[in-house]
Image 1: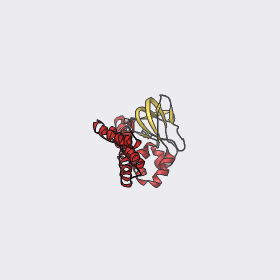
Image 2: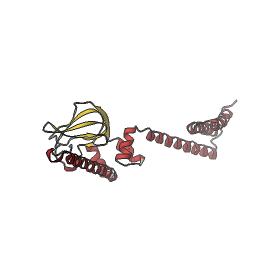
Image 3: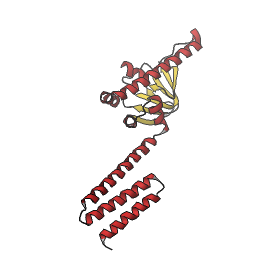
Image 4: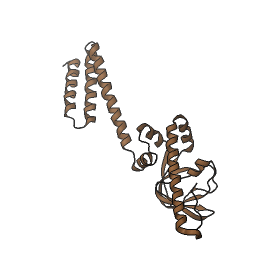
Length: 230
């Protein structure tokens, strides 16, 4: 059997095989292979212009769909902690913006006793707490607690001042450190990214103030005032 005939039958067999695939990905892969074989058959048989052109379009279209599917799988494979931060806290649903934000985050574990922020620290890190808890200390005295869903260092981001309190891990934590420099740079070219963080930090700050007021009311006049971390 000549090469041209072999490529023709291969293309036909692959195209039939694609119909037997159970997954869309399998269909696309077989279709691409069939298109490449058809492209080869056209070139071997004198480069039939129309056939070669349509085979190339067929391969390109299926390749593009395969790439889009892979992209959707990567987005869908976000960890639960990333999804909670991006969708629930920052309220960003656009996949492209989500990918840009993921690049700003460094996820890690923090063990009890680790000092996340020092009192008086200039430009303290901006930290999101996915789980666990940390104590807020003023001059070595515990004045508050931060936990899941809270931000640390947000007051310094808002005011530009050094950290007013220290933050020390009390329970094993899972945290995301936000690259403040990269965030500022990204906000200049993509204002919607900066706006998402600003809104999230404002909501977090309002929640902290509400908790602080509730705690102060519970303690009564005998209690000491609470302090916000960072």
